[in-house]
Amino acid sequence: GNEEHKDLLYEIFRSERTMQDATSSRDKAPISKICSKDDEPVYTVSSTGATVTADSSVSLIFSYCQKLPGD
Image 1 (tube, helix red, strand yellow):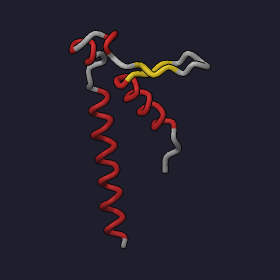
Image 2 (cartoon, rainbow, N blue to C red):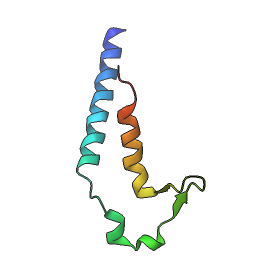
Image 3 (cartoon, helix red, strand yellow):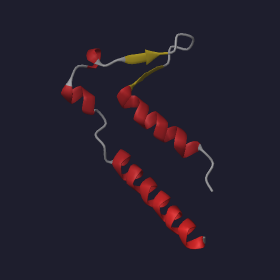
């Protein structure tokens, strides 16, 4: 019932806060410290030239999620 929904909502808010904290405090260039950017796989959209790497995808997904409508 209501208590179950309240607990679920609390967990969602807590998870969101944890993700925001993790992304805001993460190093902006962790891969460059470990290996060369030349070694990192890059996905390129041939029609637009847009590129994404494993590291850049995290901030792109976060940015996309921020634009989704909230409750």
